[in-house]
Length: 156
Image (tube, rainbow, N blue to C red; front, top):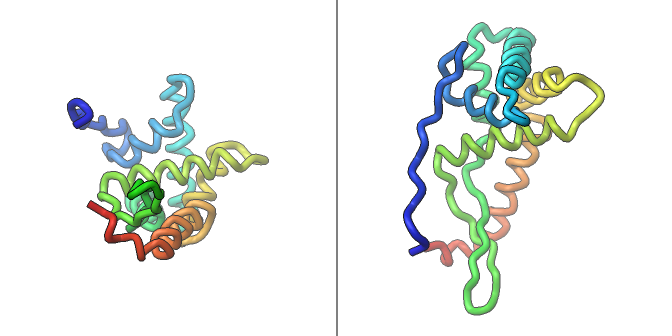
């Protein structure tokens, strides 16, 4: 074994909606420890996004956007007999959430031209509708896993 397994830290809930996914979003958006700024950006994005798609519940809007980006499978490199194989593995629900948040925030950081909260809002709306860069990333990862299904027997 490689030492002890890291303890799972409890994620604190966000101030406004007491939702762990929104808290994870805020933490992922935060740069240089400026949490109040990231809170303002995320809250502005999710509230205007929910309003734009006529969703009354902001938390339901975020949950649906995240659900549309969650990957069911991903690939991990396994070394077997001197060769590296891309082995498809199922993704745990916690990791699905982490990847979905990461992909949405990364996609919004790559875009420019508007303010960050506008870009994040547009990406969340696209994810809510099942389109956009984050959903493309999910489909690409799942397509890779499907293409390497022949190596699934290396999973252990």
